[in-house]
Structures are given as C-alpha cells and as structure tokens.
Image (tube, rainbow, N blue to C red; front, side, top):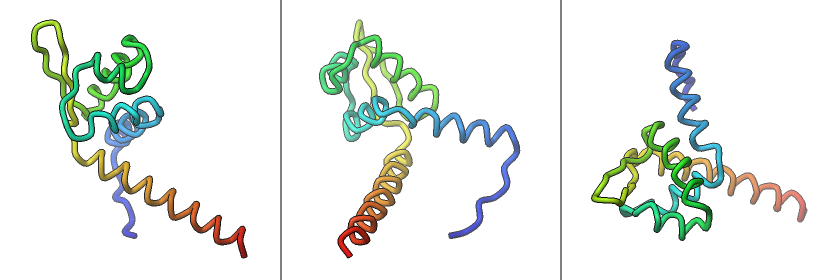
Length: 110
C-alpha cells in the first residue's frame, strides 16, 4: 500500500466531510437503493422504510457531499448517484470487512 500524500488542512476537512456523509446506516441504505437508477424521493422513502423528512435530510447531506445529484420535475425531486467512486469505496470497505470476518471465523474454528 502506498503512503497517502500529505494534504493541507482545508483538503482534510473536505475528506472528513465526505467520510462523515457515509457514516450513517440510513444514508448507506439510500445509496444502495439508488445505486443504478434515478429514484423519486417518495420511492426512496418506501424502499428504506423511514419518514420523508428523514430521507430528505439524508439526501441533502449526500447531495452536499457530492455523492448524489438531484433533478426537480414539477412537484417531484429525483436523485441518482453522482459520484461512481462512492460505489467503489463502499465495495472496498465491504470486501475488507468480509475478509476480516472470514479470518475471525477461521481463527475461532481452529
């Protein structure tokens, strides 16, 4: 693994903001829901089984972090993934978690 470059404080703030946007399970569920197509807010609400206020709050955070795009059409707002890198990042974290858990299981069965 290569050593990360040293970033100025302002850049570190931006990185931290993006990671913070991914730190909530509801936001991760929303990202999974809209993974491969555009969704209307009310459809996201049904899929993640929470209130519209809650979904809208989380979508705003994901939008501010640059992970999703929104489009308004009449009374409806639609969201889709804006940054495909977020999908790769989630896959890296999930693969690492899976590998760690498999290792722990092997160690427990030895």
